Image (cartoon, rainbow, N blue to C red):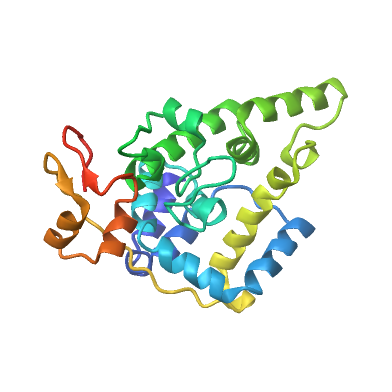
Amino acid sequence: TPERRHELGSTRAARVDLWRRVRVGHAIPDLDNERVRKWERYYSERPDYVQRMTERGGRYLFHIMEEIDKRELPSELALLPFIESAFNPEAMSRARASGMWQFMPATGRHFDLTQNVFRDDRRDVLASTRAALDYLGKLHVMFGDWHLALAAYNWGEGSVSRAIARNQKAGLPTDYLSLKMPNETAYYVPKLQALKNIISQPHLFGIDLPPIANRPYFATVKKPAGIDLALAAKLAETPMDEFIALNPSYNRPVMPGGSAHRI
C-alpha cells in the first residue's frame, strides 16, 4: 500500500540509498521464465555496461523516483530508461524515437513535448519524464494490467488492443505471455524483470552497483531570455558535457528566449 511504501521508504537506509528506495516500491507482478533468465545472463555478463548505465542514470533517477512516488506508480518504471536508451537522453533510434524514454515524434507531440528547430523536448529530462509517466499511467488505466501497459508503451496501444481482440476471437487467453507480438515487445517485460532482479540482489549476479544518494542531483533555475549554452554552463560553474547531459533538449548552441523552460 502507499502507506506501507511510505513507512519503508522513510527508513534511514532508504533515505541514504536510492537503490533501496527503488527496491521498496516494486509493485509489478513478477515474471519467471527463460526469457528473463536470458536477459539476466546478458546483463550479468556485461558488468561494465551495467556500471556505465547506472552511473549515467544516477543523474536522473532521484527526479524520476520523485515523480513516480507523486503518482503512486510502481518503482520498477524508473528502470525503463535502462531498456529504452541505456539512460542516454540524447539517444535516437533508427525509427526516430528520441530521448531517455524514446518517444516517437507523434506520441511526443500528443503529450505536449515541443519539437522544433531550436529544441526537442523528447530529450528534456523533466518534460520527457512527465510525459512518459503520464503515458504509462494512461496505458495502465486502459489495459488494467502493467505487463500489457508496458507492451503497449513499446508496441503501441492499438497493436496490443488488436492482439487482445485476436486472442479473444480465438478463445485464447489475453495476458501478456499469451499474445502474439514482435520479439522486441515479447522481450520487453522480461528485460525489465531481469534488471529488477539484478537491482534487487546485485551480489547474486556479480554486479557492483555504484552508490546513488537519495537526494537531488540537480537543481532547476529560471532560464534567462536567450542565453548561449556555453555561457550558461560557465555561469553555472558546470563542465560543458555535464551541462548538456542535464539540458540535452536544445538543437542549437543558443537557448532562445520566450521559453517557460528551466535550466
